Length: 137
Length: 137
DNA sequence: TTCTATGCAAATTATTTGCAGCACT
DNA sequence: AGTGCTGCAAATAATTTGCATAGAA
Image (cartoon, rainbow over all chains, first blue to last red; front, side):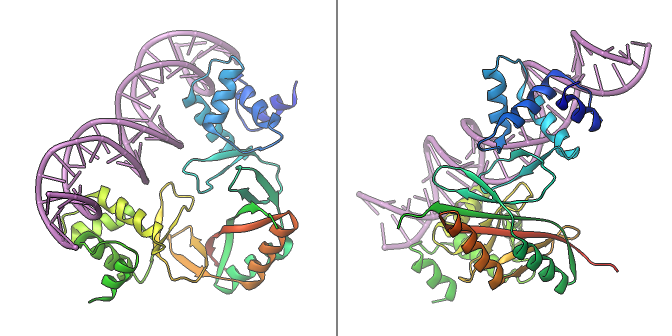
């Protein structure tokens, strides 16, 4: 039984071809690791698979509920998905080429907690995205 | 000549009723100060003004280009707008009641700059949003 | 009169849902 | 037979655009 197979079962999802394929695509995307539903859909078509875009959305949403993937809403008007590694991280998005770099910083994390606490709140989630450009000089 | 009047002219926009009204609505919203296009539209209707939703979007977009307002994309599926104060700040959004609290933290700002710099990038913009809940215990 | 601004409807884009058929138990 | 899963088309939701008209300079 493959690894993907286990992940799906663990998430309480029946192992089906669309789900396996979509999981594979998410896992194989080493570079940008942040794909839109349409990106995934096009990769499926390119691989000769016959799945509908609606199924891609359904599967990605199920994966999100299952905690397998994380959905981000960068300021681009559409969602992007990445495989959840379990470890939290923030993002740096290059506005020139769309490249996404992940990072975490303990000092920032700690400050956030303190700011919320001082205001009488506890943090449920947070999103920090830096929109950056390669330095020239 | 009113204050709004000046702001519009300074932005190179002709002073028209929809623009004035929309600016007023943004300014008068002391509490939440983060309105969606539809919120603004409904306030206009409630005030008896006859403007189309399309105009609201056009005006808000123009205001954004002019630097008068800032558009945010919290994870809600639609944009919200706030009057630009000139000073940068981040947001804490209460997931229970939607309340928005603004804050800034120099330590976080500085860390961000350093993280980007270390990676060879300069920050063009950034967005930090904490999704929080009121503490109980 | 010339150029900008606006309302309304139609078009787009991203995403979701209804439904009939197929697959697996 | 029953329940879950899928494709396709239709439905939504947010936002944008085309166009003919109304207004201001």
